[in-house]
Image 1 (cartoon, helix red, strand yellow):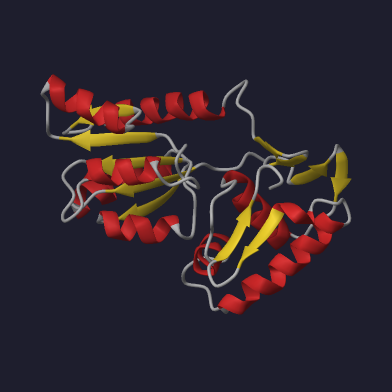
Image 2 (cartoon, rainbow, N blue to C red):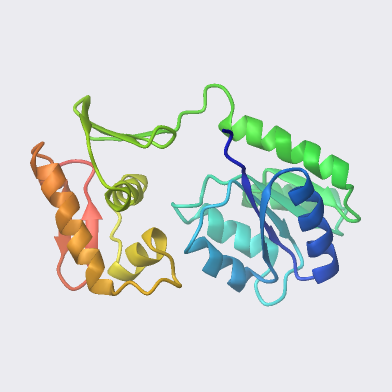
Length: 232
């Protein structure tokens, strides 16, 4: 069974947002809506969309600034982005591309053209030759098969341990607070307590210890955790 791609539409005009959402759901996509950059940032704490459609003229934080934030956020930095705008000047398009936009469409948007561009971007990002394996210090996780390998040996982990390890491997040498870990693994709106993070980190560390890799997962007292790409 083919997994449906998830698309996040960030558009402050509800009529446009609903129209695009309906057409994309009809085309078989899972669609999530956000009416502002702040709402989108909250959504990013819970999911990583396969593709993002963002309007340039968002209130408070512009779509361009949001794109910059996305490209600087490791967990979602590689998501393809299509920008919608009423701006038609070439220098505006160049500016958008410089900020990290993958494609650019001017309003009013042709739904058929948008769907074609979405398909092209998803093929580019997830097509042949695109690796869904993350590899850090003899540890590999295959995102498609949900498999963990340490020194090429298959390692059994729970779903939560897999998601924790994925977060750490995607953010090597980066300090992650307990709140950040909680938001990305369990979701901002979950009822899980922060101390639950420590419990599951301990379980993940026990798995790594069996393969002499627990030293890679560092506890930074009072701050959080860091997965070091190389031994200090």
